[in-house]
Image (cartoon, rainbow, N blue to C red; front, side, top):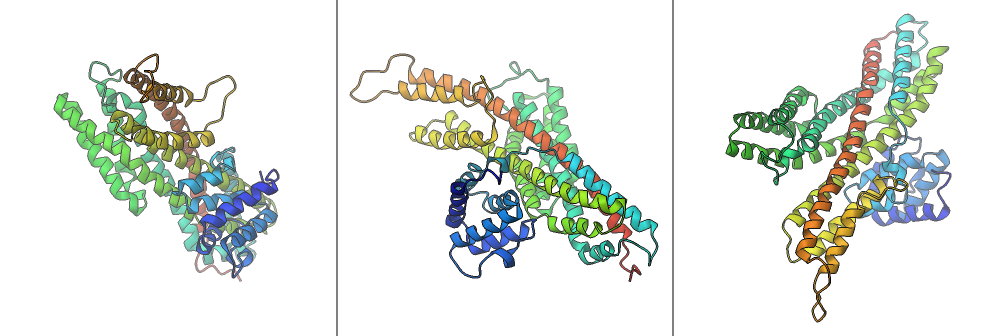
Length: 448
């Protein structure tokens, strides 16, 4: 990517950053940036934001780490949709994971295990890992944050996945237009999905970041009550339970997604990078493995970050899709304007998220065509009534096209969701290896 970044693209990215970031934004970006550059090395003491952006971009380009830097830039103001689109629209790979995390995680975990064995097998003063032991003693708090964060990732994703399964697999029941007679999913199967959410919430609560605990408790409380109400078979009890579950799947995934985003953003990767660097001096196979682990960490951290940003962009798109659903369900006087704003944002995100397949229409085309036909069917004062179906009939076509679009988008989001869950699971051996290494290094080690 950095080899194909033209001078014009380079300047455009710097200009976008200069227009939207302040000095303190650049400082925070560089504090999280995993390369060697930092606020003291590439950020001028004085100047305009454009100068800060240009100086930082030139420095990270020389280091060969433009993408990790831009990832942190996007994260810094992720909720600013215009800014986010300006960056990812030019560097789409930032939100498209192209490499698998699992092989890199295995390489790092194996290297840490080999290093731990070397430390355990070599009594002082012959221990070959003095540099590592000293680093672990000095950086123990940061390493414990890494270990805890990896565990929290796994817990967050489990809770998020159970909510997403409820939303997608339970769509028959959560759709307000469906009835007992039109639903394909048996009641018992839907109750099992709800109970799975309840069980997962109970299992992960103690492993979650503090700001997600209340979300987890809401999931447990509502899922528990909903399963009981649905089991009665009474229509009024079922409708109350479904209303509660609809609100749950509309609200809580965003809370969890934000927590995953913050956890990823603040993960002290430099501590892990420096730990691996400290072990590279060990002679023989352990040192060689640690050198290989350094490159694996670089690839893994950026692949995981791209997957998290991809997931976050899908989550933002899902919020827009729900807003579009509300607009179509209750048209107002500003119907077309509101619809245009939401649909434009959705299509812009889809251009980044979805690859165009040869000879296959894009998933947004049928709905877009239905919207065009509706607009053409609207009467214009002083002109003959447009031929063809009426606006009311065209609205029915829009509703059908929207349901088809929403299903396709949900399935693609679920694919990304499952991939992220699998990658979080692949990090667990890394967590275990870090725990073993950290436990092996005594605070009172006698290494000279």
